[in-house]
Length: 278
Image (tube, rainbow, N blue to C red; front, side, top):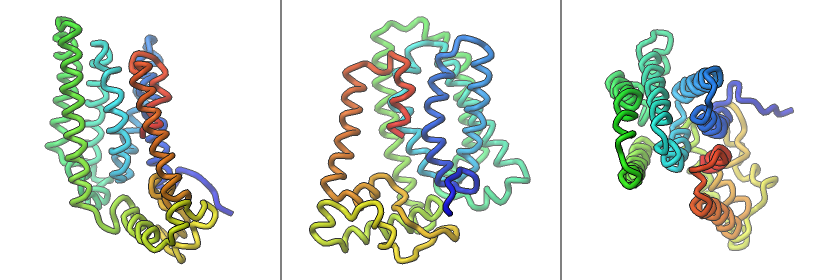
């Protein structure tokens, strides 16, 4: 039988973290009771530690996209900026702990690409300094800013996040090979080759989810037989074809339009929107 669990399965763990961390993040930002703040903060710290230990770079793309849509929500209040600083400080300290603690020496040796930067003590120290600034300095300055100034800062920060995401993708591409993302690179390369070899009908409407596994011809990853593309976009393209892929992309476009029209960043419903973007 086939069991589904995050235990011993980095890919499932990464997907789970992309879903649960944005929800906890919003609850952490909106909590008013000290006990709730501490509990959600502890849960997010454990999630950050798992993010760093799983060495799956794709999780940072998902969280970064969530951060792009969550930024107006965070910058709306100075208290949320302070709590964001606490999370940045937590991230930096977790990175320092993993990078300096002898028990994780094997993890550091396997780190490459983005992780080789994040787990370096100098980068972790910079993140800690940013966290301290958000905790102590920015909230004081924020109270003196007008609404127009805040909106301009949000726009500038969003542009900076887009540019940094492009840099993030550039780092990924430079380190991309068959071993990238816990062997996902090899699976993705195979998936792209499969689509190229499909006939016109299969390219148009796909081969269906139940028939896809046979096309991988016994390809294995971590001693497990590969049955899916391990990428939502490639999976939809292979199983539902170009038509299904276009509908899948259209659903995300509809979500973004709904986000903008409803000013989702002003409501607690953003907790359910962010995981969809991850």
